[in-house]
Length: 123
Image 1: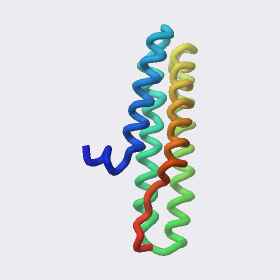
Image 2: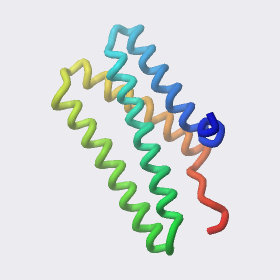
Image 3: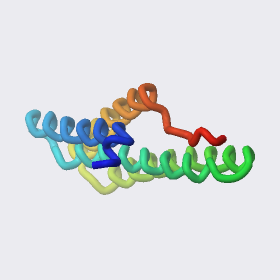
């Protein structure tokens, strides 16, 4: 519960995943795939938090390298998971997954505008 107070982004992303699953269920789509697509964004958010924490340590060059590698890693994870679902799932499941991901990522972008990742004030 403490995490939800410190990081309201988690609550917004989880609520988005639940909402996407509910809409998919009402529309007769694959609710599990839609929720999984939105939950992929939670994984990307966790990678971002890890990158921020690792980038705080060390010099400016270290932080820059960690930040760039973190961006590449998040992009690779997103494209890799989307490609894997596209190859392994049927068309309806893939569509629900992508719509869930796009909805979750849109919510993530709004959360990032509202509350960017915290960097410790000592730097």
